[in-house]
Image (cartoon, rainbow over all chains, first blue to last red; front, side, top):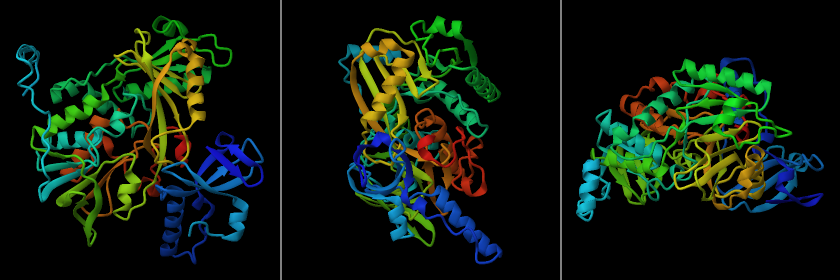
Length: 104
Length: 416
């Protein structure tokens, strides 16, 4: 696979390290609204889902790649998991600036 | 017809006219006690044990394509019980015991060959870790034997013992491990289930579940709606896709694992050998091809093919321990889709939907688990209680803090 880096141009995927679904950028709020059991449970549930549950889509998938053997930037790559076809590559920091809640 | 030496000779002399198809091709009934979604190794084993051990034979196995066409036909056929953790090793040892009796149980030649697995170690630290693992195996009733370099030399004299970077210091030998003819596992279980009245329905894709008020009452399929008291999903590789139809998201990512077979060679590798400093394992099939594999590719995918960097990495691992392998020509390579779970361990559990059960998340170790997975899933479906060897394989274990992380790398599926 070739990832078309927005700054460096086309680079081989073996230069990158794969992290996973781009929703990992959306770390949930660590504080509940108050210390009541129901809000604590809500926070725990949100963290459980954030850490362990994946949508695991067949088709278009937004995912995080780290350019370890390059400029060490984090990228959000939109790739089809059925064909490995990459349709979009963005710098993760730009994605985070533009829409703080990726994939929501 | 029961297979026996007498019958083989009799059929040979009478033109094989007495041989019949091994399973029927029935049309689905309106309702079953249990529907198993997925006609792979685990699904067919579940049906076999439901009918033969738990007396439930009003069962259908629904398969999207043909039975045994998924991962049970795409693996590297290795069986072993060499895990460490107390939630895992008794389960895999139980599986090994079922493998040892499989052919007697199913009356089908699955070519179970306990030719031994040797895990090589390359440093003192790794040796100590293998001693610990070996002790864990012995405590669960498995077998383990630590070999020094001379011990390995006797078995595999052609390995690269003096490799400059990763010299081979010895290995952990698991003598009861080995290989099995993978397709014959699916066919043997199918025959065993079918002979007790289980309907195996091929070319029947499940397209949805009938769920009302939190109770699953059947499935929608390409052959119409079929009712059931209990539905057991068992579709490793497609788990997330199928369970999404029931509105569930799982702690699973799908990854591709590649495997390779060389041209047929004369007997050279007596057992299974694994490289301890990288990820490479190799055995020789009865046809003579070297069967080997390594790491998963490491990114989410549902395409049953991988990329070249991993091919290179696997071949480098092979050459590092066994330079002679460089002379063999690659004949075939393929990829299979793995349910990579968040801690590297599987699930055999109920879901929050009554009547809907889930079996999956086998990572790239599902084949060896086939018999125990089938037995434990059949136990769960029949009795609604987890089997004693599968108590840890729960879907809510991340919430409760009971992860079974054999490798200790955390919730990063491509590292398991």
